[in-house]
Image 1 (cartoon, rainbow, N blue to C red):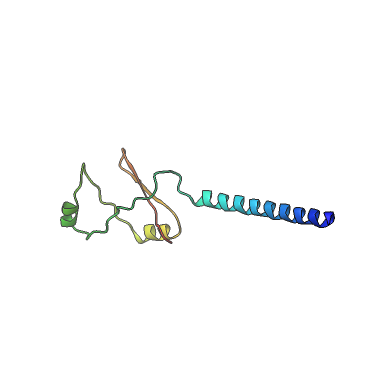
Image 2 (image 1 turned 30 degrees about the vertical axis):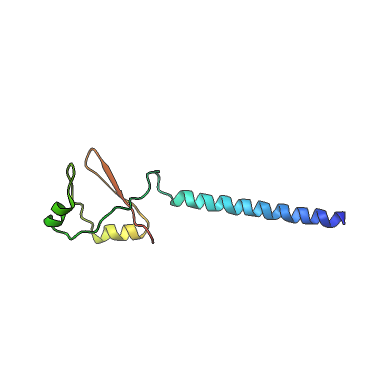
Length: 99
């Protein structure tokens, strides 16, 4: 009976080690795929017509820029890359969600 209990404890210990290794590997993968900042993704990104009227109706707050994306940019986003742009004062990063 004691021998069976030891085997059971050994089996449980092995499963726990395997599970910890799995969780650690999963955490490492998540860290590599996580964005490098904690602000989170914006949910208030709007899709507008590509017109000056749409910009006027949406509003520009303190100013604005229009950033054009080429097919190369879109392909990079689809490959999991992040686009970056700055105006010398503020930086903007664009990522593709929901691959």
